Amino acid sequence: MIECLSSSEINQSTFAQEPELIERVINIKRISKVMKGGKRMRISAAVVVGDGKGQVGVGHGKAVEVAMAVRKATARARKEMVKISFRGHTIPHETWGKFGATKVLIKPAAPGTGLIACPQVRAVLEAVGLKDALSKAYGSRNHYNTARATIIALQKLRTLDMVAMARNKPIGYFVERKGNEKVEG
Image 1: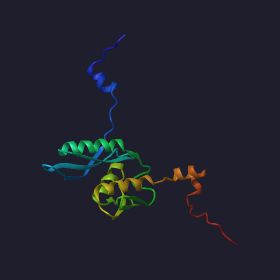
Image 2: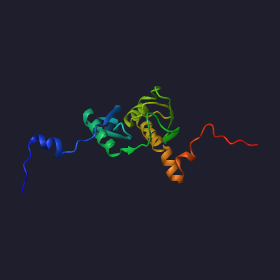
Image 3: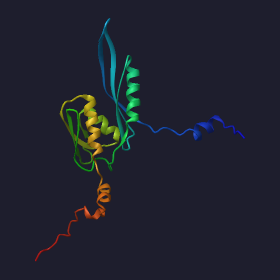
Image 4: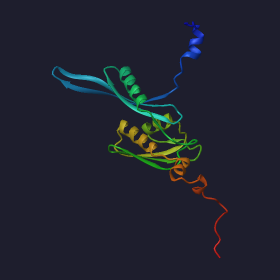
């Protein structure tokens, strides 16, 4: 038997809501291809997409119009989203990432510091959901390569729980305890 649902019931229960994603356009540029009849102009766009809770992706798209190029880049970024492990407002430890000739260093920062980074690294860190971090980009400053190097650096992060589980040790094994120094006599 077929059940009829009202439009309000369909909107509320039938369709799962897609999570709200943070989209940042990091670069739009005009590119040209020399053809027989002259130059063919197109638009190239690079976009960072994240959910603000640990997932981020970067995409690149080309089209005749800006809107179409951004739409293509956003679709690719959504397909390439990866999970980043961190806790709280900053990263657990310093990390490096390299993509092409670009190297990116990301360091943890104290609460209230904010994101000190170039625009491409800042876009990725905001999309992931980080609030405090320091960074420095070395080598080539290509927009897309810098964003990819940042994601590679963030993928190398390991939380204390992950390290303890990998080494089959309790978390207390890795934490320094103050006041419990050995006294040699």
